[in-house]
Structure formats: structure tokens, C-alpha cells
Image 1 (spheres, helix red, strand yellow):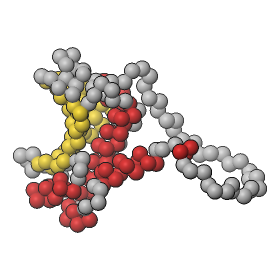
Image 2: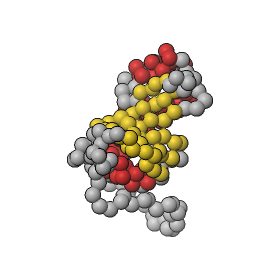
Image 3: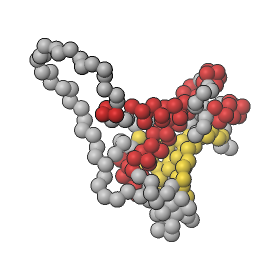
Image 4: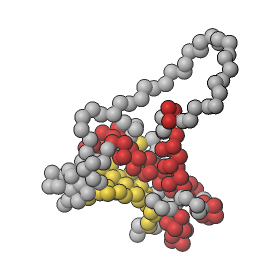
Amino acid sequence: MMPRALTALLLALAFAAPAAAQAPSARPAPAKAAAPKATPPKTAPAKAAPAGPFDARDPASLIDLLASVDAKAVTDRREGDGVLLKVTSPAGGFTAQFAGCSPQGRACSAVQFEAVAERSSPTLAQLNGFNQSSLTCRLTQDRAGKPHVLYSTLLFAGDTRQEMLTQVAAWRACLADFGAFLKDPPGYLAIAP
């Protein structure tokens, strides 16, 4: 059985496939009488992807990418070969820590997303149970007993904007699983793969 985060990612990618890729039906649908045209509901316009080159290894590119999905990221600090971003989004706050960066804070080798829960304290056995059921997400516990969820990925010069959006979708799936787990650790683990 697939972990929920991976299943959610695969479903998101499957539904994102263009309709043109679907197989045509065996016979055309019967003609329908013309119906009066309804006014389509107004929706917010989709945010356009930033123009220009994209470099997944550059924290500035992730800041722009996150802005396109309604999240706001700012550089919190640079330390050694790392850059830490603080991110706020409708789903909550988290950090993105770039590592193995150039002295200019670009050309980073990896990024780790992390969020902390302020009010839940599952047992270590429950945290280990979650980790055994998830392929991509990891839970840890800090010295104050607060659980953290982590997701990390390596970064390469050829990574595209779409590939990084896939990483962000995987992170969002981790956040969703983390939230479901924290609401009811025994219940979550009872149905986990």
C-alpha cells in the first residue's frame, strides 16, 4: 500500500494531465438542444508564473514560486552555506532551509521544508509509527516535546519550475498527513499502510 503523501502526489499529477491525453469515447455523445448560455461564475485569475529563468537551487526562485501558489516567503537569515526562508501560507507557517549554497547564497544543493506543531504531543512510538508508514515525510520531536514534520529534496541545475512545484505539492501532502496524524495519532496509525 502507498503512503498517503505519495498517493496524494500521484493523484494530483494524474488530475493535472491535459484533457487531450484522455482516450476519445467510442461514439460521439448525442446532440442536445441548445440551452441558454449561463454566465460562468467569477473566479480569481490564476497567478502567472514569474517570467525569466528558473533556478531551483536559488532561494529567490522558490520565493517567487511560492508567491504563485499564495504563500509568502522571506529570507530569515544566512548562516554558513545555508539560507533559511520563513514562509506563511493559508495552510500555516513553515520554513525552507537551503543547504550547500555558494558564498552568494545561491547554487544550493538541497532544501528541507519543516513545520512544527505547537500544541500536540504524540508519543515517540506514535512518531515512529508515522515514520514507518510514510515514504517521503519524517516526524521528529524537539527537546520541548513538540513534533516537527520534515520533507527534503536534492536540487539540480536542470530542475524545472514544474518539478519544483511537484516538490511543493509533496510538501503540502506531508503537511496534510501531519495534520491528520496530530488530530488522532492512534486512529491515523490504525489505517496507515
